[in-house]
Image (cartoon, rainbow, N blue to C red; front, side):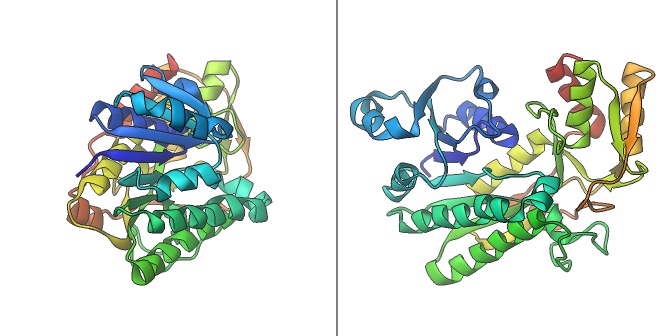
Length: 334
């Protein structure tokens, strides 16, 4: 297969980690990112060419013919930009990894209409262009365990009833359903990867909507008290970003196509926030902690079954929580 990829949200947390891996594997990589949640420094160490969206046509005409395969093209624009969609429709890509989204649950609770446009409508527009491409493009969609809500069964299988507790979970589920419909109507080759709680390097925590590990690392970096939501006994299936990157590579390189199916990407284990906090205390000693109410829309427990990922992708998580935390703390220089 050709190795030409578009990574949406490729300057963000998970997307940038994938871009580094794709470059290491000698893929030709384009990134599109509006920089609302992205940082160019996340691509440090790579050869990059940054092009604002309004200059993309000029770049294509004058400079792209001489582009080195190893150069990552970073298009600073929205995913619904007509020039970005035109590139997809022209057959430039074999794989589209779709990370661009507003991923914070609390924010979608506060702004459901705006985030529906970002997380659903713009994704469908991009998918239309994928279906118009002259070559068969595989669309790898980053979904979430939030589609399940408070799941009845732990570990949670993909067949579990979907009862999202937030607009974010519902928005991701809506795209999943559209991808399955798109396969039936247009033959779209796509797969939905339902991530557990992802943590690791390149995840900042200076937002009120950040996950616990990144938020705590940020607070320690800034010399401020940590915040613990609720009673701390809520549990999460914590997956290191490197394992999520591995799942995306496996989904991209499988010879057989996909029909829009969804697979869980997790560890099949769960830990409480209090346990994670205890690991921070083991490493850093006594910590100042402020306690806060539970966050609206948060589920109580997550733990994903991964038998389908094993079957379809030959996926197996390989990074323990302890090792993942060590790598994360190292990135923060803590």
